[in-house]
Structures are given as C-alpha cells and as structure tokens.
Image (cartoon, rainbow, N blue to C red):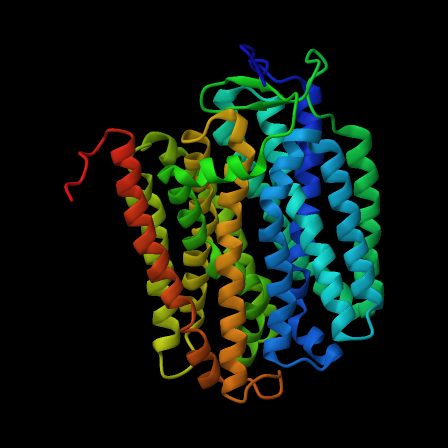
Length: 441
C-alpha cells in the first residue's frame, strides 16, 4: 500500500453532501427493514403459527448474519469501495423482503431474514466509509453521530406507517412494497454514489483521527488484519462497549418490546408504539450531546458516558420488572429514554476503533466493533424467547405478565459481563497508551 499525504477537502462541496444524503436515506431504509418484524411481531406469530423461540429465531438469524458479515464487508469495502457494496446490499434486502412477503412457511421466512441480514450488514459501514472519503477528518466524529441519529428514523417508519399499512392492506402487499423501495434505492445508490472524489485516482482508506490517507492497491490479508486489530486492547474496548450499551434497546425494538408492552403491560397498540417512538427520539436527541461530551472527554468516555448509560438502562429495566404488577405509564416512558441512551453511547465504540487502529485496518476494526452489539442483541433475543417457552408462554395467546417478568431477567447477566470486560480493557488500553502504570504481576 502506498501512503499519500492528502485529505478530504476542508469544506465539502454539494456533491459530497448529496452522496452522504443518499447514503443516509439508504441507511434509513435499512433500519426500516431491520426493525420491520418487531413492529408486527404479534402478526408474524399468528401468520406462521410460531412460538416465542421460533419468533426469536427470526431476529437471531438476522442478527447473526449481520454480525458475521461485518468483517467480510469491511474487507470488501477496502477493495471495492462503497458504491457496489451498498447497491448489492439494497438488492439483497429487497430480495429478503419479497421472500418474506410470499413466504408460506417458517423455513422460507428464515431464508428471508438471512438475505435481509446480509444486505443490512453492508449499509452502515459503507456510509461510514463515504464520510471518511468525502469529508474532512475533523468532521468525522460529528458526521458519524449524525449518520447514526438520522438512520434511527427508520425505526419510526417501521413502527407507525409500516404497522398501519399492514393493518390496512395485507402481509404480502406490505412486505412487497418494502421490497420495491429496496429495488428503487439500489438504482439510486448506483447512480448517485461514488467511492471517492474525482480528484483522486484510486479508492482510499482514511484515518479520521489523523487525516492520513492510504491508497488501496491490493487486498489486505484478512487473517492478519483481524488478529492485529483484536490484539490491541483499544479494539477490544470498542467491541465490549458496543456489546454492552445498545443491545437491550435493539432487542426491545426489534422483537420483544411490542409484545411486552401490549401483552404483559396491558397497553393498547397506540400507547405501545408511542413508548417505542420515545426510545427512538431519545436516541436522536441525546446523540449530539453524547457526541460532544465524547469529544471533550477523550480519556474518560467509558466512565463518563458508556458505563453510566449501561447503569441507567439496568436500573430502569430492573425497576419495571420488579414491580408486582404492570408499571405506570411514566415509568415505561423513563425505561424508553434510558434504553435510548444506548445507541449514542455505542457510537463511542467507533471512536475507540478509529483512535487505536492504523488506517489500513480501520475497516476491519470497525467491523469487529460493529459485530459486538448485534451478538449481544441476538443472545438476549434468543434467551428471552427461550425463557418464555420454558414457562409455557410461547405464543401471543399465552403471553402473561409473570412470564415476561422472568424472561426479561435474561439481559441482566449480559450487562454485567459486558461491564466487567469494559473495565478490564479500559485499564489495559490506558496502560498501552502510557496513561496508567504497568501492573505488577
């Protein structure tokens, strides 16, 4: 690889903003695809006659594919750039939703979720790459936060318009329409997005911390890149930060939030949708605040931002399920706000990955980091479904308040394990950086 001492333009032009806008719009659609099943979880259970474990399997398979594809996607992005990878991702998501629309059985529906997870995996890392190649390094952290914040609007699309459209039409029409949008966006992405500014003769990787640009001339040794990235405690800190902070909100919105609020808490669909909407809006509002604090506290982000987010979520979660009966409405809204801190806090993980890895393995480190939160989410989703089944409450007709109280204990050990690893890897990272003295054995 050849190093070049150039950086993106100090002031991005209209074309950079257009490309970023199309990329973010594609990310919004990807989030809508990702959370589409969570908004209609009860309808999905009825359509496929699925128990809780099977319903959870839909989300688990999707997230497993998403997480497993992160490192390969990072390598493909290094080699081919964002434009072709995003286009293929949109086509795969469209194919997945069309398969879901026509699916006559659980087996075919699972194949649909596999396609959806594979396509979804390509979008966010590709947009982050567009930020790095089209915008100056100094704007990188802020643009990443804005990308994540705007993308979460896709959850609102899935939550309200999608569910209303399903109730007004049919399963096949609803998911077929989403598939059509995916095809249109694949064309739009291919026509508008370019891998790099025209003044560059090759695609690049950019270290957004230093502005160093490295022209990609050959494939990176995948095994070496993964091992080298994971060997640095800063990458492991990034992984565990992303593992611990957003998973509960993901599990809540992706699958179990709506059944919990309606079947266990006794809310109607409108109130339940309002609570989940507050979760999304809270994340969008808190994103810039947490992003600015992260910039101001570069050596204290874990203690000041990530771990407090985890603690707030844990306290609010346990408080709701510890009550002997359904929680008051204000308490459920507080739970939504607490869970909403997880998404912005998880973005700090990408700052860790960027800070502690050279540009030539930045995509690999980002892929490792991004996989963390989705691995935790799929574990939580599966364990909640399994706990419901073991209590004989595996279908919407048998969901009970007591069954959900027990099942919702499953995320607690995940938070505790993740917190322990954050503390350990934070200490090791500070030792590597020379901020703390080496431990004596």
